[in-house]
Amino acid sequence: MKQFAQCPKCRNANAQQLSFTWWGGVIGPKLFTHVKCQTCGAKYNGKTGKNNTTNIIIYFAIVGIIVFVLSFVFMMIMYL
Image (cartoon, rainbow, N blue to C red):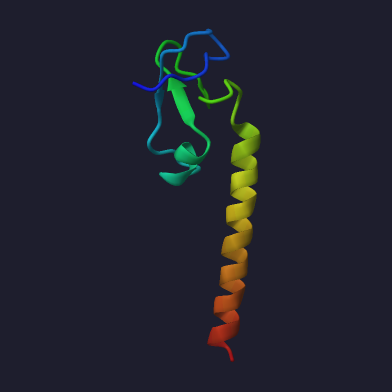
């Protein structure tokens, strides 16, 4: 079992890495070492022990921009 940073809520290091989340699918949790504390259920960054909210917002913004650009390119190709 991997060793993760302590939970920011209960200070327990007993955590399990998540394999899927609604915001990141299968890529996001691996990218940010998103783990869930087995004691209190808090979800956090397993490397730093901090909340992943900022990382999730940045991830959403980047994915949104990529989808927008690809949609724009696809529409330009279809209408030319």
